[in-house]
Image (cartoon, rainbow, N blue to C red; front, side, top):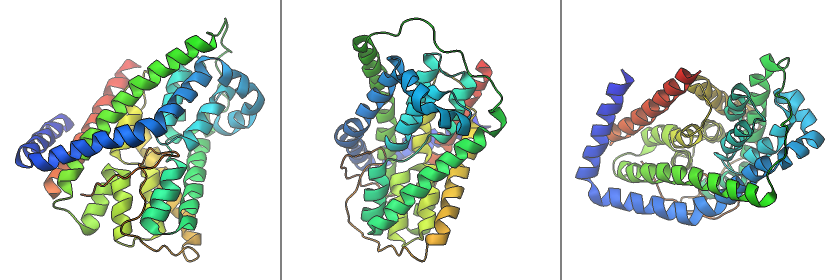
Amino acid sequence: MYRKAAGTAALCLAAALLVFPKAAAQGASAGISTCLTVLIPSLYPFLVITVFLIKSGAASAIGQRIGGPFARLFALPPAAAPAILMGMVGGYPTGSRGAEALYESGELTAQQAERLVLFSVNGGPAFICTAVGLGFLGSARSGRLLLAVHLCAGLLVGILVGLRHHREPFPPPRQGKWPGPGKALLAAARDAAASMLLMCCFVILFSTFLCILKMFLSGPVLAALAGVSEVTLGCRSLGALHAPLWCFALVLGWGGLCVHLQVLQGLSFPVHTGRFWLCRILHGGLSALMVLPFANRFSPVPVPSGPSIDVFGSFAQSQPALSGSLAAGIALVVLCAALLMDGGGRQDSML
């Protein structure tokens, strides 16, 4: 069923490319620019550092010192501590890359790596504080509040995911000699480059079609569709509508299908798509609930044209300008969902 829906959606999107070639070209150009000026400079170093810590054995050593609380909270081996921390500050896909490296090095089992991915999908501080707080809400305090509840909700999801697994044994410590720093750095740079290539492909793809969508949609319909498909556009649309803070928290916790594709595709261990989406909804819902008690104390002042930082940005500056025909938008969402479900089905078949 979903394969037919994916085929229909793909045909609709192909028709949109033929009917609006100029907008498609502008969107692709904007996506390439975002990758070169924001995504690669801000995210690639975090990916290299995260993978290097794991492949060099440093994560295992660090985990032995600080990993105890992480093991007790999340039912994960201590070596996962650096990947969890980097996933909190490095932007949305960083945590999944750390889980991948830990699985490949034997520090995590496939089930433990999946649980790490389920709660380590977090927005970067610069994106939430600067782009969403200052750029879309006109309030740095609101941005800091959103970041705090976003990270707390993610950690709470991790605790809930690990509740049933505290009695499971951890994999035995890796035996043998770790590769030298030079080899570990080379492997980390190579793995991070492969991940970056896949992420850039999705950014360019979404940028192309979202540039077409902005010609037709506006108001709540655009905000809802954008929030489901792409988190930057979703937050921008909510800001234009003067939406309450809990709406921003919900969208940030969900993350958007664009981020989901980048997190899930290319992993060497299976991740159940339904569980992943459930955790994303739970993350967004918990974030929205945590914001509600502070709603009256934080009064956002929407700014139509403020500073903008890409969703993947950790500490870099950016200026994406993507806003969101209803049919084409639904086709984009359906195609992305079908891709995720198809990937999840293939991964489950590996078990």
